[in-house]
Image 1 (cartoon, rainbow, N blue to C red):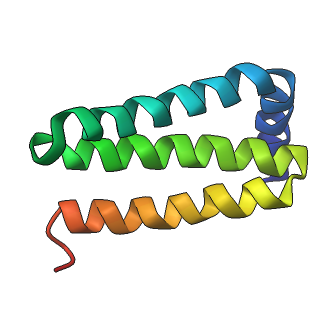
Image 2: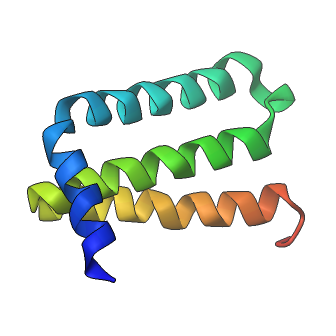
Length: 92
């Protein structure tokens, strides 16, 4: 079971800069979309997109053994899940 994660972690370590830049650009895009469109934003899309970039950036931080960014982006995963639940009408 650990072998697949070893391969993924190796891929992430080999492509760290590109993956982190991708995650940062994804986050800039989603927050820019909300800033630009305001209440007309596709909130479910934004929350899902934001959660994907949070998972990507968290995994990169874990591989780098960067505790601060692991915590920060882990927090964004939790916020993203709450945002998805609210946008989907599962939370009031």
